[in-house]
Length: 253
Ligand SMILES: O=C(O)CCC(=O)C(=O)O
Figure 1 (cartoon, helix red, strand yellow):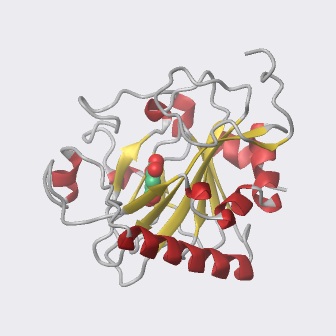
Figure 2 (tube, helix red, strand yellow):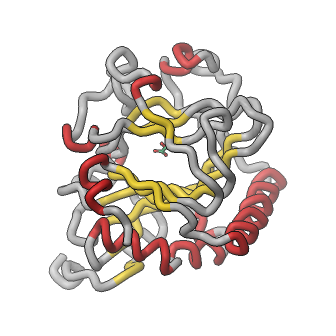
Figure 3 (cartoon, rainbow, N blue to C red):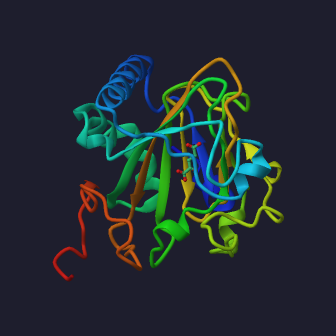
Protein backbone atom coordinates (compact mmCIF):
# COMPACT_ATOMS: atom_id res chain seq x y z
CA UNK A 1 0.00 0.00 0.00
CA UNK A 2 1.46 3.41 -0.90
CA UNK A 3 2.01 5.87 1.93
CA UNK A 4 -0.82 8.27 1.11
CA UNK A 5 -0.26 10.20 4.37
CA UNK A 6 3.29 11.00 3.22
CA UNK A 7 1.92 12.21 -0.15
CA UNK A 8 -0.78 14.38 1.49
CA UNK A 9 1.78 15.93 3.86
CA UNK A 10 4.73 16.36 1.50
CA UNK A 11 3.13 16.60 -1.95
CA UNK A 12 5.20 13.78 -3.40
CA UNK A 13 5.87 10.08 -2.93
CA UNK A 14 8.73 7.90 -4.16
CA UNK A 15 7.48 4.37 -4.85
CA UNK A 16 10.35 1.93 -5.48
CA UNK A 17 10.22 -0.87 -8.06
CA UNK A 18 6.88 -0.14 -9.72
CA UNK A 19 8.39 -1.46 -12.98
CA UNK A 20 10.47 -4.65 -12.64
CA UNK A 21 13.89 -5.30 -14.19
CA UNK A 22 12.51 -6.98 -17.33
CA UNK A 23 10.04 -4.12 -17.87
CA UNK A 24 12.78 -1.54 -17.34
CA UNK A 25 15.02 -3.27 -19.91
CA UNK A 26 12.21 -3.13 -22.48
CA UNK A 27 11.45 0.53 -21.67
CA UNK A 28 15.14 1.40 -22.04
CA UNK A 29 15.33 -0.31 -25.46
CA UNK A 30 12.15 1.36 -26.70
CA UNK A 31 13.22 4.77 -25.39
CA UNK A 32 16.58 4.52 -27.14
CA UNK A 33 14.89 3.40 -30.37
CA UNK A 34 12.45 6.34 -30.21
CA UNK A 35 15.25 8.85 -29.65
CA UNK A 36 17.16 7.39 -32.61
CA UNK A 37 14.05 7.59 -34.84
CA UNK A 38 13.48 11.20 -33.78
CA UNK A 39 17.10 12.07 -34.59
CA UNK A 40 16.93 10.31 -37.97
CA UNK A 41 13.71 12.15 -38.80
CA UNK A 42 15.48 15.46 -38.06
CA UNK A 43 12.95 16.26 -35.39
CA UNK A 44 13.83 19.17 -33.08
CA UNK A 45 13.74 17.71 -29.59
CA UNK A 46 15.91 20.15 -27.64
CA UNK A 47 13.63 21.67 -25.00
CA UNK A 48 15.68 23.52 -22.38
CA UNK A 49 13.38 26.11 -20.89
CA UNK A 50 13.85 29.67 -22.12
CA UNK A 51 14.46 32.58 -19.78
CA UNK A 52 16.83 34.48 -17.58
CA UNK A 53 17.14 31.55 -15.14
CA UNK A 54 19.63 30.00 -17.60
CA UNK A 55 22.26 32.59 -16.80
CA UNK A 56 21.82 32.08 -13.05
CA UNK A 57 22.10 28.32 -13.56
CA UNK A 58 25.32 28.87 -15.52
CA UNK A 59 24.06 27.16 -18.67
CA UNK A 60 24.02 30.05 -21.13
CA UNK A 61 21.86 33.11 -21.65
CA UNK A 62 18.19 33.80 -22.29
CA UNK A 63 18.40 32.69 -25.92
CA UNK A 64 21.32 30.26 -26.05
CA UNK A 65 22.15 27.31 -23.88
CA UNK A 66 25.22 25.10 -23.52
CA UNK A 67 23.08 22.22 -22.25
CA UNK A 68 20.21 20.20 -23.70
CA UNK A 69 17.27 18.05 -22.70
CA UNK A 70 15.51 16.08 -25.39
CA UNK A 71 11.76 16.05 -25.00
CA UNK A 72 9.17 14.04 -26.92
CA UNK A 73 5.51 14.54 -26.08
CA UNK A 74 2.62 12.08 -26.45
CA UNK A 75 4.86 9.03 -26.27
CA UNK A 76 1.88 6.66 -26.50
CA UNK A 77 1.48 7.90 -30.10
CA UNK A 78 4.99 6.68 -30.89
CA UNK A 79 5.02 3.19 -29.42
CA UNK A 80 2.47 0.82 -27.91
CA UNK A 81 4.92 0.11 -25.11
CA UNK A 82 4.14 3.53 -23.64
CA UNK A 83 0.40 2.79 -23.88
CA UNK A 84 1.02 -0.39 -21.88
CA UNK A 85 3.00 1.64 -19.33
CA UNK A 86 -0.02 3.95 -18.92
CA UNK A 87 -2.11 0.90 -18.04
CA UNK A 88 0.48 -0.72 -15.78
CA UNK A 89 -1.36 -2.23 -12.77
CA UNK A 90 1.33 -1.18 -10.25
CA UNK A 91 1.31 2.40 -11.54
CA UNK A 92 -2.48 2.63 -11.47
CA UNK A 93 -2.71 1.05 -8.04
CA UNK A 94 -0.74 3.98 -6.61
CA UNK A 95 -2.53 6.55 -8.81
CA UNK A 96 -5.95 5.39 -7.56
CA UNK A 97 -4.79 5.60 -3.95
CA UNK A 98 -3.70 9.20 -4.51
CA UNK A 99 -6.40 10.45 -6.90
CA UNK A 100 -9.43 8.27 -6.17
CA UNK A 101 -10.87 5.31 -8.09
CA UNK A 102 -11.23 7.15 -11.41
CA UNK A 103 -8.04 8.10 -13.24
CA UNK A 104 -7.77 9.92 -16.55
CA UNK A 105 -4.85 10.76 -18.82
CA UNK A 106 -3.82 14.42 -19.12
CA UNK A 107 -0.59 14.12 -21.14
CA UNK A 108 2.69 12.23 -21.45
CA UNK A 109 6.27 13.07 -22.34
CA UNK A 110 9.80 11.74 -22.33
CA UNK A 111 12.75 13.77 -21.00
CA UNK A 112 16.27 12.63 -21.84
CA UNK A 113 19.19 14.48 -20.28
CA UNK A 114 22.41 13.44 -22.02
CA UNK A 115 25.64 12.91 -20.06
CA UNK A 116 27.78 15.96 -19.16
CA UNK A 117 25.41 18.54 -20.67
CA UNK A 118 21.93 17.60 -19.45
CA UNK A 119 19.82 20.69 -18.76
CA UNK A 120 18.43 21.46 -15.33
CA UNK A 121 14.84 22.67 -14.74
CA UNK A 122 14.24 25.76 -12.54
CA UNK A 123 11.89 25.42 -9.57
CA UNK A 124 8.25 25.63 -10.63
CA UNK A 125 4.77 24.32 -10.04
CA UNK A 126 2.97 22.59 -12.91
CA UNK A 127 -0.20 24.53 -12.04
CA UNK A 128 0.42 27.56 -14.36
CA UNK A 129 0.86 25.28 -17.39
CA UNK A 130 -2.54 23.57 -16.97
CA UNK A 131 -4.62 25.08 -14.15
CA UNK A 132 -7.49 22.90 -12.92
CA UNK A 133 -10.45 23.32 -10.58
CA UNK A 134 -8.78 21.33 -7.79
CA UNK A 135 -5.51 19.56 -7.05
CA UNK A 136 -6.43 15.97 -7.95
CA UNK A 137 -3.79 15.91 -10.67
CA UNK A 138 -0.26 14.57 -10.41
CA UNK A 139 2.84 13.64 -12.33
CA UNK A 140 4.07 10.06 -12.32
CA UNK A 141 7.78 10.42 -13.09
CA UNK A 142 9.01 7.00 -14.18
CA UNK A 143 12.75 6.43 -13.90
CA UNK A 144 14.14 4.77 -17.00
CA UNK A 145 17.70 5.19 -15.68
CA UNK A 146 18.96 5.49 -12.10
CA UNK A 147 18.85 9.17 -11.11
CA UNK A 148 21.25 10.90 -8.72
CA UNK A 149 22.13 14.51 -8.00
CA UNK A 150 25.06 14.19 -10.43
CA UNK A 151 23.00 13.00 -13.39
CA UNK A 152 20.18 15.48 -12.87
CA UNK A 153 17.57 13.90 -10.62
CA UNK A 154 14.30 15.52 -9.62
CA UNK A 155 14.23 17.78 -6.56
CA UNK A 156 11.16 18.89 -4.61
CA UNK A 157 10.22 21.29 -1.83
CA UNK A 158 8.30 19.04 0.59
CA UNK A 159 4.98 20.48 1.71
CA UNK A 160 5.04 23.36 -0.82
CA UNK A 161 1.79 22.14 -2.44
CA UNK A 162 -0.07 23.25 0.69
CA UNK A 163 0.64 26.93 -0.14
CA UNK A 164 -1.54 26.69 -3.30
CA UNK A 165 -0.58 28.46 -6.55
CA UNK A 166 2.47 30.70 -6.05
CA UNK A 167 3.43 33.91 -7.93
CA UNK A 168 5.68 33.29 -10.93
CA UNK A 169 8.77 35.18 -12.11
CA UNK A 170 7.68 38.08 -14.34
CA UNK A 171 7.38 36.96 -17.97
CA UNK A 172 7.73 33.28 -17.14
CA UNK A 173 5.92 30.34 -15.61
CA UNK A 174 8.67 29.37 -13.18
CA UNK A 175 9.07 30.74 -9.66
CA UNK A 176 10.99 33.81 -8.55
CA UNK A 177 14.68 32.96 -8.79
CA UNK A 178 15.44 35.01 -5.66
CA UNK A 179 12.82 33.30 -3.52
CA UNK A 180 13.14 29.83 -5.02
CA UNK A 181 16.76 28.94 -5.88
CA UNK A 182 17.29 25.27 -6.78
CA UNK A 183 19.19 24.87 -3.49
CA UNK A 184 15.90 25.27 -1.61
CA UNK A 185 14.72 21.86 -2.86
CA UNK A 186 15.57 18.36 -1.65
CA UNK A 187 16.91 15.79 -4.13
CA UNK A 188 14.85 12.68 -4.84
CA UNK A 189 17.34 10.06 -6.00
CA UNK A 190 15.83 6.90 -7.48
CA UNK A 191 16.55 3.61 -9.27
CA UNK A 192 15.31 2.51 -12.70
CA UNK A 193 11.70 1.38 -12.37
CA UNK A 194 11.00 3.64 -9.38
CA UNK A 195 8.24 6.21 -9.79
CA UNK A 196 7.94 9.59 -8.08
CA UNK A 197 4.35 10.81 -7.86
CA UNK A 198 4.03 14.53 -7.23
CA UNK A 199 1.16 16.97 -7.02
CA UNK A 200 0.90 19.70 -9.65
CA UNK A 201 1.22 22.30 -6.88
CA UNK A 202 4.43 20.80 -5.48
CA UNK A 203 7.42 23.02 -6.18
CA UNK A 204 9.97 20.97 -8.12
CA UNK A 205 12.84 21.17 -10.58
CA UNK A 206 15.91 19.11 -11.42
CA UNK A 207 19.68 19.38 -11.53
CA UNK A 208 22.17 19.57 -14.38
CA UNK A 209 23.46 16.21 -15.60
CA UNK A 210 27.22 16.61 -15.16
CA UNK A 211 27.86 12.85 -14.95
CA UNK A 212 28.88 10.35 -17.63
CA UNK A 213 25.45 8.67 -17.61
CA UNK A 214 22.07 9.37 -19.22
CA UNK A 215 19.10 10.44 -17.13
CA UNK A 216 15.89 9.53 -18.95
CA UNK A 217 12.39 9.69 -17.48
CA UNK A 218 8.84 9.23 -18.75
CA UNK A 219 6.43 11.72 -17.25
CA UNK A 220 2.71 10.89 -17.20
CA UNK A 221 0.27 13.53 -15.95
CA UNK A 222 -2.82 11.86 -14.51
CA UNK A 223 -5.94 13.39 -13.00
CA UNK A 224 -9.34 12.67 -11.58
CA UNK A 225 -11.96 13.11 -14.35
CA UNK A 226 -13.93 15.28 -11.91
CA UNK A 227 -11.07 17.78 -11.81
CA UNK A 228 -11.68 20.11 -14.73
CA UNK A 229 -9.22 22.31 -16.67
CA UNK A 230 -9.72 26.05 -16.18
CA UNK A 231 -8.56 26.88 -19.71
CA UNK A 232 -8.04 25.18 -23.07
CA UNK A 233 -4.29 25.83 -23.33
CA UNK A 234 -2.84 22.38 -22.80
CA UNK A 235 -4.75 19.97 -25.04
CA UNK A 236 -2.95 16.74 -26.02
CA UNK A 237 -3.82 13.65 -28.05
CA UNK A 238 -5.55 11.07 -25.89
CA UNK A 239 -6.32 13.60 -23.18
CA UNK A 240 -9.35 12.41 -21.24
CA UNK A 241 -8.69 8.72 -21.90
CA UNK A 242 -9.87 6.76 -18.88
CA UNK A 243 -7.11 4.59 -17.40
CA UNK A 244 -9.02 3.37 -14.35
CA UNK A 245 -12.66 3.38 -13.28
CA UNK A 246 -15.32 5.53 -14.93
CA UNK A 247 -15.84 9.18 -15.86
CA UNK A 248 -18.90 10.29 -13.86
CA UNK A 249 -18.93 13.66 -15.67
CA UNK A 250 -18.62 12.50 -19.29
CA UNK A 251 -22.37 12.48 -19.92
CA UNK A 252 -22.97 15.79 -18.15
CA UNK A 253 -20.61 18.03 -20.14
O1 LIG B 1 12.58 16.06 -16.35
C1 LIG B 1 12.79 16.69 -15.32
O2 LIG B 1 13.86 16.63 -14.73
C2 LIG B 1 11.74 17.58 -14.68
C3 LIG B 1 10.64 17.94 -15.59
C4 LIG B 1 9.65 18.87 -15.01
O3 LIG B 1 9.83 19.41 -13.95
C5 LIG B 1 8.41 19.13 -15.70
O4 LIG B 1 8.24 18.71 -16.86
O5 LIG B 1 7.53 19.80 -15.09
